[in-house]
Image (tube, rainbow, N blue to C red; front, side, top):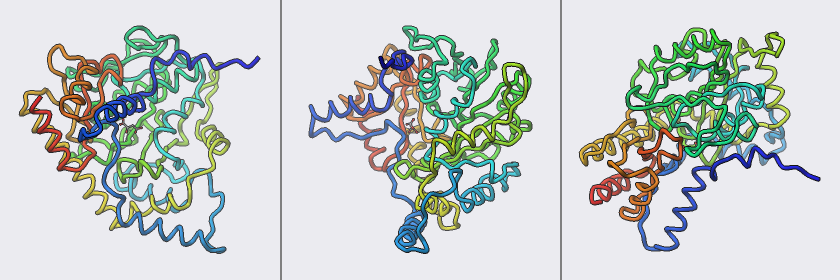
Length: 408
Ligand code: MLT
């Protein structure tokens, strides 16, 4: 008899974004003329940068020749991309990362979801609440949690509330935890963490022999130079942190698929008998076994992100999204909403009106304004009474969305 992985039965609901997609499709079918504006899932709307497109076209042409054909590449990524990442993302900030500590992948969602595989099943997972659902769901699937309660909180996960009071940066846990997921700039709240705040976490991880899984997918949206782009800007982090980066939001690669993960060579975990084990070779082993590398064409596109034209073009696109975020903050604040985020991240996190829960607000916005957002409750119990709006859209549509919200 074939047995199912019963951990999947513990999952509370469908994955958040397909669930929203399902509701939006049902609404669109019932209201075919409704001019829906989507500010829900953080999916980009601007075309890829011309430098990226040129590089990908050239790579396609190469692949059409015997000399230029690229078959299986290095699973960890081509040296041309790993080197240029170090030169541009890390060296200018004096961040010590070597090219062979970088693992190129098909995106941060997969890497943040897969990384838990290299850790023991008895580790205690700590997540912020609200949280990007991938961190939680993948640990549920792996069997690292118990059942969920009525609020959707799983047993054996330590939830660290992120509220307006703590500026959406959690306090250190009062009980021992082993795998700590942090995401800054934060999805969904749009908050950022200072160097001092991250230092507390790095010190905690060192002291408690824990690991920090640091999702930096939104670092390109930081507008203030004092805010860290990388966990490795914090002293000691190389011993205790893994960092996830993505070209999805930075360079509009949500449909192209490319990201990378840094696993430093100093990073260790322990066997049950207390012996230290290097994690870099373990992740390398896992990556090479389960992944055949990102396509040459995609990696050439990613390389072009770092060309001088690429950098300029990508900056212009990020500026456009961040100008949307500024417009949204201003409009919503003017309408009386309490608004967070949107200053160093492409997400606005707003408090729903008194007495209106986040799914009710979702329905209200969709029905009355034909605007789609993401209910805060979808990111965890502490997201209830909040609502996320994404700044990824055409400025005219964002303005139209704000005008429509003003009328409800
Ligand atoms: C989001 O909207 O939270 C993200 O786009 C989802 C993702 O990056 O997977």
